[in-house]
Length: 267
Image (cartoon, rainbow, N blue to C red):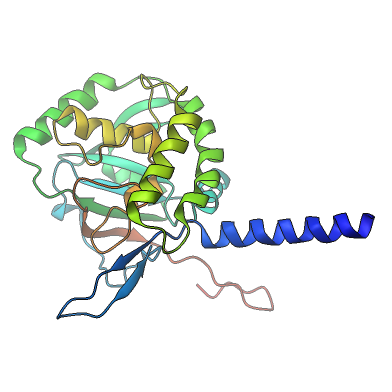
């Protein structure tokens, strides 16, 4: 009897492992056309400059640009591992070398230079259609939120939500089914989190919503930095966006270390 339960437990664990492995890789079936045959696109987690990108200076940034970053800390690594993503933080560029962000101490504004000095990677994206009026509204709203407390509860609820929603992101699942599944799960699991405090990506999305230019119709509390990354052009978003984000460039990129068999770092 014990062997039966051990075998069944092993099968369940294997199935769960396969679900988790396949999940987090949303796909989209492309209908055949005269220009291209039937095909399937999968989420792209690549973000290195060599993967079709380039290193740029801060001079190319425009107010309203979204910066996605990662840093060599345990918390950042945990977020990236949990979301199957190379990014763990989202920042709003205000212009004139200043950014606004929601961190553990609350919403703050600080120089962009401080971000690029601290982070291992900083990559910029832009929502097409941002006007000077939109940017000014975002700046005004962000300034009014400085000091607002961090949405710790929302982040804690995000962890099980990110894992559970992998069931909604199995390959070849139609967009409509995936979106319905994710939104239903979010309503149940995240409905109790506060919307008067912010974590990083929630803050960025709320700034756009306050400016009358929402990036997604989904509740900002549902969206992680990884979700913002997949809202870029040419990718498959887990949470649909109103329009895809355009890649601007990498402000900083330190490749992860490659450890050889003898323990040497070849970076």
